[in-house]
Image 1 (cartoon, rainbow, N blue to C red):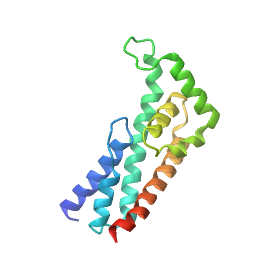
Image 2 (cartoon, rainbow, N blue to C red; image 1 turned 90 degrees about the vertical axis):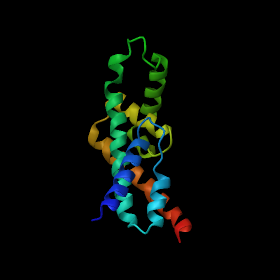
Image 3 (spheres, one colour; image 1 turned 90 degrees about the horizontal axis):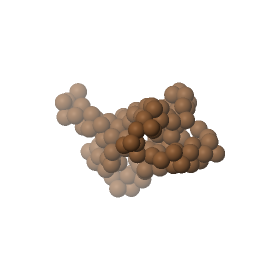
Length: 147
């Protein structure tokens, strides 16, 4: 394998990982560039989905331990906001994690899943399904641009 190929795949993984965290980052543009270069779409989908799913796990861990700091003065969320987020999550349940691919909303969902102590395995399965479907859609629609 060429070093440039490995670097390109690492950049895709990193950008997908960062896009799933609370940082404003996007991976779709880089994915389209790699498609235009003729890289294997299935490999790109797998790498982007893995990176994006693992980035969501960071949010899950943050949420899992977030409430231990709610008594601190610098704590960002007010108790009413947390109660509202928990109520919405309870209303729609863990199945809402299929929407974790959505911009901004998805990051909040994965954070709330941690707060709500959703078990890691169901979290991973649902988030991975949603994020993989997202990258499948990106590749599908990018097909119109690439060809």
